[in-house]
Image (cartoon, rainbow, N blue to C red; front, top):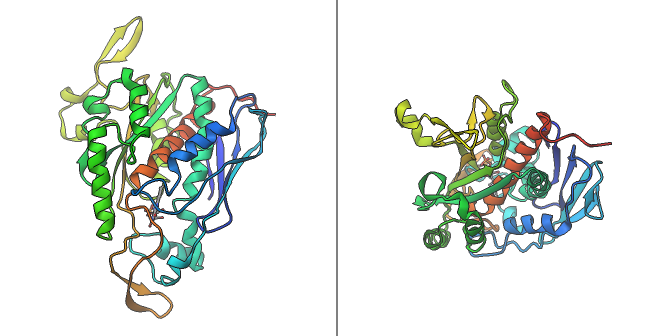
Length: 366
Ligand SMILES: Cc1cc2nc3c(=O)[nH]c(=O)nc-3n(C[C@H](O)[C@H](O)[C@H](O)COP(=O)(O)O)c2cc1C
């Protein structure tokens, strides 16, 4: 199943070690202004080989518009975007044939699809397709004053001192965007970013990997988005974000509230300038599956990267014998920094789809 979405639909294709990685988008209204460099700048945030904390694979990830956007405007027809894979190198994987990497997709994809390199489709590279489609969804949402921002709040147990529920100030949004783009781990807290970066580099040198948490907020979502009972906004966010490889947990709102009294975390209503607001936002902007007008806040946990260079025990599936492996390929020692733009993209795709579904964005396709 390679298609996501009900109206704003993306279908992804390609794999880590194939010739290309691409996406087809259906249901994007005609007349949306979007330029190649806007899609490219989203891809830049995910591109490998940019720092010591990401995979050393050298890819330019230059996006090509194949269909559906002419002179910077969507035509309402199917859109197709693609990048070519230039630095393909399977040599690091040859000694791993039929020896599944622990915690990776190798074992289950081989058992289900019957050929060894099936797992290639679930590698980090597939997420470039999501980022390309997400760039279009983000631009569509921007037209309706919706902004999406994701950043790292925890890596290897090191917590950012700033997060939506700690020390986040919506007025400083532009400042946060600059900070996120100026450090390799995409954290909103510059001091902690250095500590996170050092922890990843140290772990990599030890042949190991670490995990962490990405926080995403969506601002400007009007009251009413979400189609209960089975297309709740919350359910679609769990579904979309949960489809990102290596996701280990998703919390909408403040997770800690499961340990609190209702009186401590119930978001009380008040009226400001004739509009109903809540004094706090522990629910993360969604009540009963429908947006309540407050920022939508989601925390997404990522497990440590499965591929580590330390020797690990596994089995040879051809010989049905126990064995060991040492992984040589190019890998991210921590998935979190590169997952940040992917989280933004999936959040945008869910919201664009839900806004179209609920009629908040008019459908305009031939
Ligand atoms: C942006 C991104 C980059 C990734 N890079 C790697 C990597 O370099 N090495 C690796 O083993 N897994 C990497 N992964 C994770 C695998 O894609 C994923 O863990 C694996 O397919 C197993 O799936 P699961 O963790 O969802 O069970 C990456 C994931 C993402 C989202």
